[in-house]
Each structure stands twice: as C-alpha cells, then as structure tokens.
Length: 426
Image 1 (tube, rainbow, N blue to C red):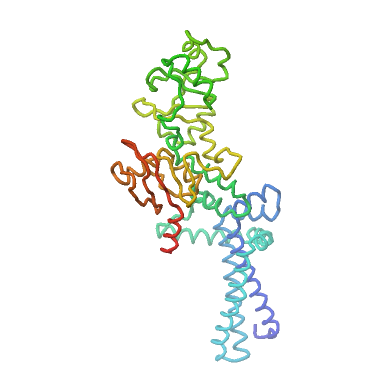
Image 2 (cartoon, one colour):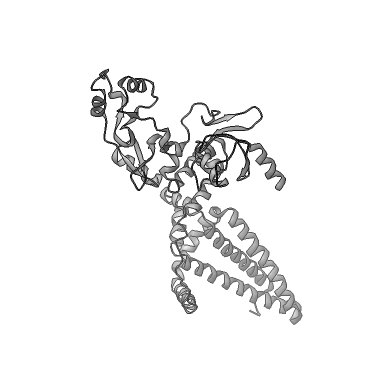
C-alpha cells in the first residue's frame, strides 16, 4: 500500500464511495418497490421485474448480500482514507480524514442515493437486480453463513426470523388504497368499490322496506279492492297474505295476471299464480345475501326475526343500490323522504332510513343503532318528543315538526348550521 501512488488511492476511494452509493440505493429501491405493480410487470414479462421478484422472495438473503457489500466497501474506504491521511497530513490528519469521509459517505453514499431510490424505485431496482442476482450467485455461501448467524441471534432473543406476509391487505388497508387512488380510479367507481368492501358490515335490516311500508295484497279483501290495488301498484312482484301479513302465502308476479276473474275465485287464481315466498333471517350480511340471491335465483325476500315475524322486505335491486347508488337519471333528485326548504333546511320523514339519507344527502348521521330517523330521535331522547323540541345528533341540529301518538312523523334537519359549528370549532 505504501508503494501505491496517492492518485491511485484517491481514485480507488472515489470508486468505493460510488459502490457504497450503489449498494445503498439498491437496498432502498428494492424495498420500496410496489409489490402489486411488480406482480403486474412480472406477468407482462418485464425482465428486470422478474429478477427483482425472485430476489424479493428471500428478502433475508437480499438484505444480507447488500449489507455485506456495503459494509465491505465502507470499511475499505475508511482504510484507504486513513492511509491517505497518514501520507499527506501525518497522524494529525487521521481525525480529519474520518470526519470528512463520514460526511462524504453520509451525503453521497447514503442520503442522496437512498432519497433518489425512494422516489424512483423502479429506475434503481430493476437495473440493480441484474447485478445483485450475479453477486448473490457468486457470494451465496458467504451470504448463507451470515444469514444463519444473524437468524441464530434472533432466535436467542426469542424473535422469529420469519416475517408476516406483508403483501396481504386487511379490509381497512384496502379501503385506504382505494380512497387514495386519486385520478387512477374515477370517483364514482371508488364509491362503488368502497360499498363492496362494506357489504359485510351492512345487513339486510339496513336496506329493507319496513313491514308497515310493504305493498302487499290481502286475499281476504273484496275482489274490487284487490283488482284496484293490482292496477295501481308500481311493483312487479307483490306478496300475498290473508288478514295478517305474517301469514304470507306467496309472491305474485303481476305479469302473470292476464285475465283474472272479477269476483268469485280471484283469491284462488292469484294464489295459483304466485311463487313460494322466500324468507331471509334478520341480520344476514349483504355479502352473504347477494350470494344467496344468486344461488336461489330469487329477486325478493321477506325478512323474518327469530320468532318468524315479518320485519321487512328486501329485493335484489335494493341490494345493488347499496353498491351502485340509486337508479335515477337525475343526480339532483332527493330522496322521496326528504323535502328541501327555501331556507336551506330539510323536512325529513320520520320513517326515512338513516343509511339512505347519508348516502343521498352526504350526511353523517350515526348508523350503528336505529335504522330510521324516528328511531334515532327516540333513542336519543328516551321518550316521544313534543312538536317544537330541538336536539343535536352528531352535530346536526334537528327540530321536531310533527308527531303521532307513538312516533316522530316529520323533523327538520339543518345541515348548514352543522358546518358553521364545525368551522367555528376548528
């Protein structure tokens, strides 16, 4: 080393710093690769992606190789810097050389290459994968020995060398990926994907038509009333029952009603044309019910509680609307339960479904408890309120406008005031 010219030593030192930068950048670039994009590129036959994917199958070996090379060149650079310092400045230059080399390696071999690799991982990782594959083949015995000793230290500390599957995503993590996709996925499609991810959280109770709102035909009614109801109903499938809606006898598809008798035998005729009713247990998740509808080829189901009592009715259309939103040609249409007022407030029917209100009006009323506005207000107050009563739920000022004997019929919601309160608090 003493006979080697100083210029050669300086050149070798520069080369070692460059090699250190390459090892540092390749480490960050390989670890920063998007695993899902990497799989896509592998399927497309990208050579660099294939090599990188093979290296990442054993990250312990990859990291061992990179750190082995990085530490070797850094130690070699330190040794050369010491020799140069002794030759040029004597013993007093050793400390100066150590400080300068630390600064050079920190800036040019660590921070700068790692920052660039973090910002552009593919530009760094794919070319580096070619070199690292060759180096791993050459130094595999040494890398395996280093990994064996490192894993042994982890076992002594009662730590498992085997990591978890970091490529798997939980539902909430996947929601974050979809929400932050930005312009890659249109806003409407993001909302649909979010709704699909939420299907397991939502049950048929959240989307059902309540029992008191079911449009059903009582076969014990006079034939004239039954025919009138058939002529004016807006639905193609209607439940049939006798006296009590819990006594469902079938689901009538009105397109089958061609020439019904006007008087005697109408009830029997309709019953003969009806299909057997399909029942859905209350609390069934929408993800499960979607598969059940597909498996049974049913389009409408009656929701029953644990005692067999009818709670409501759900259709395939209701379930699909939970995913894609309301089937409407006018995006400015409000829910039929919501009546906008000139002063910016909204009159809301007490029977309005809270989830549908949140979806249609972009509100954030609580959905973890009662399903309707009436239930939400009564649960909050603990009693049937009088008209004129005001309350605040989830930051929304609500005024009771009309009540019946046992329920809230109409309430006024003032969402603009909620925004004002939130801005003031902020």
